[in-house]
Length: 222
Length: 402
Ligand SMILES: Nc1ncnc2c1ncn2[C@@H]1O[C@H](COP(=O)(O)OP(=O)(O)O)[C@@H](O)[C@H]1O
Ligand SMILES: [Mg+2]
Image (tube, rainbow over all chains, first blue to last red; front, side, top):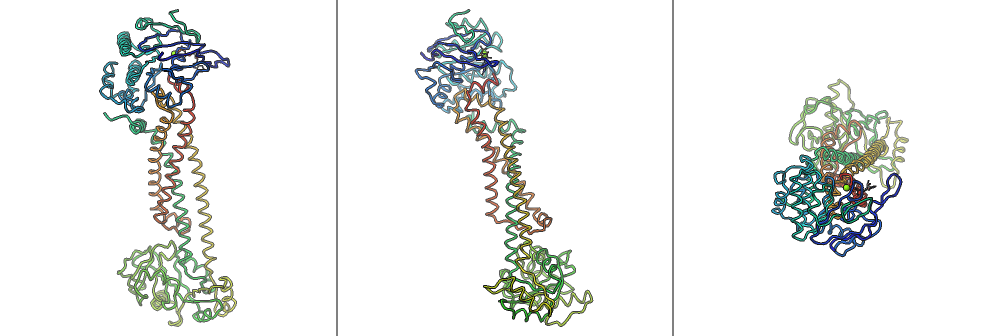
């Protein structure tokens, strides 16, 4: 298994009461898999993805990436997994406001200089349809364009798994299709894709669907 | 394309937010200026005090009764004055127990001179017996002062080799003294024979009678022998001869104690304000840098998402605030120098204490101390904030933009 969640639980306190944002979630995804997660707003999808990406720690259970338990890793080792193994596309807008689009996309090479490859960076901009915005700043971009910057940045790292939180939410139909095709191509090189979506059209691109409800994850469309 | 480095990121962050960068630098500049200015001011005053004590060179100055404060004004503040003493006092004083050396001086005030729009103090010294001024003017001239030759104080605008005229008589400038921060800076030194001539010229101008030419003196400077108490000897002089010659004494320590306590008062005021301002600006720095870093938590979380370690975020934040602090520190020091050095005279006059430019080493160490304070405070405050938020889960700091 590339990435595995083993009886993962995450609790939050809301209105003074504890509740399960993730309730005993077991889930696994392997090389080349393309899985889609659907579920109503507030059902725990984002929590699931951030726990899977090591951005939040579960209260119980294990997250395992290529046999390594997150809970047993140092900050350096976990950061290396985020930098090299996982491409995370957050639900909100997460660019560095003072850097140009091209520098935002190349940003992973700031942390891992061996990743620097300007030709590839430009090619990814081309693929994601924002080549003409390369020298623009994030505050000059629309929501859909910003989303594509985040997607480009995640692709630039050449991750083993792409984790995307509603990546096409702000995009028009045509761009959505292009992006989804891009994701489908990735799996041919063995990259896994884990996608949270609201749009039922996009489910067709994946090979399995999971439904999240009140912190519980079940296979199938409910 | 240029690679993306920490410096690229810091630069674009600084240039893309000019207002924020300028604001932060300005606060650092304020801190630096306060510390630097305080250090320079207090060390220059202390230096003025040191030279002050060295420059009189005598333990006791004996003047005519009632002229004590005039003599002090002439020496400390350069208020020109003319006064005379019964010439017989010189021999009498030399005989008093505890007096190691006694030398006469003549003090004559000019009306105005060609060089200056204000009156000057002429001081005549006896080259044969003088132990006060000669040691520090010998560096300026070769041999003893000949008749008609003068050495001028640092604030008198007359070059060596030029001539000055007082009471229609011409004098040749053979030397200039370095800055003392005292009345000596506006004084003119000559030998006692020349000074007597000047005294008669001055009397003629103001149509006064002067006594016997050969024995004219204004004051007797006394060096107290080792092992004797200065005040004791001054009292001995008064007890033995005050009635006969109408004497009064100025004890050098007393005179300078007044000045030094006023300097010390002043420097402790400076210290107090310096500490107040430093504490305030450190607080402001802490707040301003924390607020800035906090408002950028989401931005810094992004680096975590793409694989930056806590240490990496930390050093990025430190680098940025370090650059801001260095810029602020340089601005603060330059601006403070522009204020304090050109206006040093005005400052010293308004508080009535001598101001001497500190040595290069002192200035450099003041620069070092204030820069150090700046780069500890700004980046220190940022580091605290960075530590606080990197200790939290990335998701929780990220959520702000999600
Ligand atoms: N840090 C948090 N503190 C408290 N409650 C949270 C926190 N993060 C998420 N939640 C709550 O947990 C639930 C699941 O959130 P989330 O995973 O974002 O849902 P989804 O992405 O499916 O819309 C929501 O009800 C949300 O309000
Ligand atoms: Mg969500």
